[in-house]
Length: 92
Ligand code: SF4
Ligand code: SF4
Image (cartoon, rainbow, N blue to C red; front, side, top):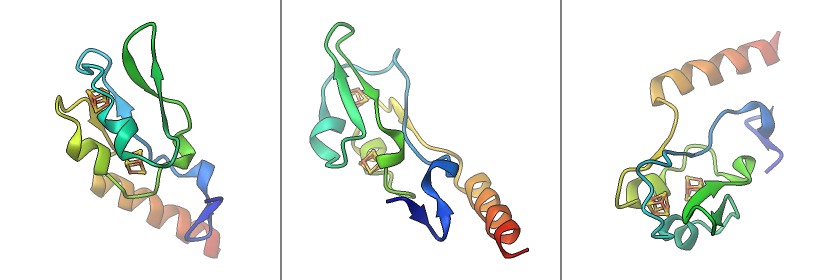
């Protein structure tokens, strides 16, 4: 996806963040996500976010399914405010 609601995808800060301390390397996120967002770091035995812009905006599936709550996303209210600001700016 190159645009979302008319906003360039790279300007939208929606993607997973992995807490390396919490990640237990189970690979569930890699199995769940079909969008090539994650790669597995074999040396660290942890998942990493390799292609953040491939993440589907407002999807949180991997965070819900991660068994150790290692994946987080932006706060929903703050994200909504940011998108409103971007859309307003676009209409000016
Ligand atoms: S699902 Fe969670 S614990 Fe498992 S590899 Fe992904 S981030 Fe790490
Ligand atoms: S939120 Fe959805 S699209 Fe984004 S990385 Fe997780 S499973 Fe993939």
